[in-house]
Length: 279
Image (tube, rainbow, N blue to C red; front, side, top):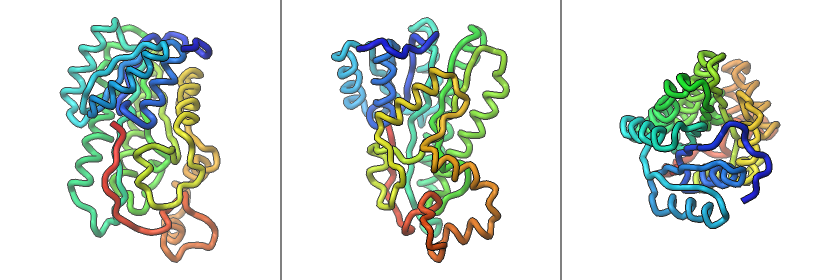
């Protein structure tokens, strides 16, 4: 693989949810830049296929099957991995699950699954070797949140809330870790063409190919950006959303909303979708 655009100080990287979609694309991008990547996900066979593809292209990759919904197991596995590689330089908490369900049909199981992966799994992944990074005086933590985390979205109560948690969690980590040598990057993407979004039956404006999204994220990591948000039109709208009064937000998100396209706020219909996930 090529060595252009190498990431200074990053030799090893661990990525969750790497058996498909964005996680796999991130692994391939990092490997092309000379980073040894360790890939984790629940689906061991798919995970090994990604690792084998990277190795066949001249990169360094290995698989570590893991379900981040088990936070204790995640912490133990990452600590062992940190010992094995002589210190992880980059941790990417990418694994995530989501579905769209009208609140009147929301079940606790829907919430529990997303909390287990998007909240507990992400937090466990990010803090597992954090004390070691601080002690070493180097390291980079990356979390994949979402533009949906800026404000509650229709049919997305649990998903929006879990992404809001991750955004706030990363924000606080970044403040605390100033001056320690440990960097924090919050990735806030819009719609990306992945197996997770393939189940969506509503319009996805500015849908981005996964390779382009991975390139933007890795470049953000290389440039040590605290926040990587894209695409620009959606990220601008999302940043402004918290300032919109509740009465106006309700109107925009309702079926009786304005004639202009507000699909960044709401699906075109309220529906129920099965859970989808990356890893």
